[in-house]
Length: 396
Image (cartoon, rainbow, N blue to C red; front, top):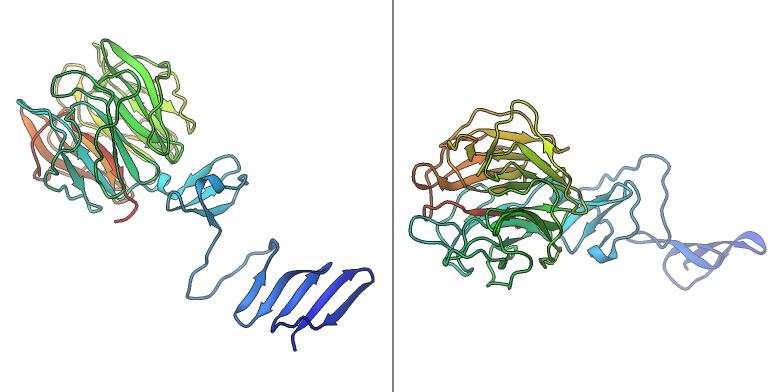
């Protein structure tokens, strides 16, 4: 016979009753709050522990899970599994941080670009170990000097740029978490090229700056479902040939560029997509543009390659901390070049590929999770410059 220990308020007593089950239940005011069964303890109320708890099994602990829309009001220290992002996330009391925000995507894609005779829509996938694959037949309309960023935790978006008729467009293409490029989506916002894009707020993205009929500082926010918004009035110095990347888990940074004169300024992006005014970088940072940037090492950024204020191609790099501070120059490794593509890969590393030296190239350079740039890897795929890169996929 099963038993229930029932603590009632009227009368105030503990009584034993038969409940017709094979469980021992603890009830309060007639409602079961815990049941001891043959497989463990089932609790219907909240558990509060005032000392450290230990789970010593060799199995696994299943925690609360749900979609992004089902997030509870955050309190510092909360942790859950987000089924929308396929990622663990935690709250600091005001923001939910996905694990994918600190440790980036596993794979990357290099898409678009041009050489002397053709503007391409083809792409090259980058594996979780940094290996660049051969060309994938173009689905997107060819563009050069476009922008791309990760959105939705594990997907990417490719947008803007100049098309094969040398007309700037705002067309976008979504890239699935398996690296499949979708057909064109009609553009939103002012068409421009030589812009940049990065992720922010864990699962959204922002396109910014570039050139239309003049230098621009306009931005366009991208939702966590890949929908582009209309123009947001620009903040910061209007410029082109700019780079951008996510830093600190949920924020972004636009870096360097030119508006007839090369710049050593950056603009930080908050976790709500607000672009800050110019930050003038410290001494020891070369004035430059035409380079690329990518996230690495759990929330840091590396900018590399490009042209200096004299127009000379360079291979200098600059690391950016998890708080958005740009470090002084690191002596370059690999072939100096302009307009390469870049992406994170392997969750915490980065890659630069393609570009222009004195000719169009396809070599790549891997970046370790400590920000060390490796020597050239022989190129794979069609040689070209103005390639755009982004990370995708949480699966290696």
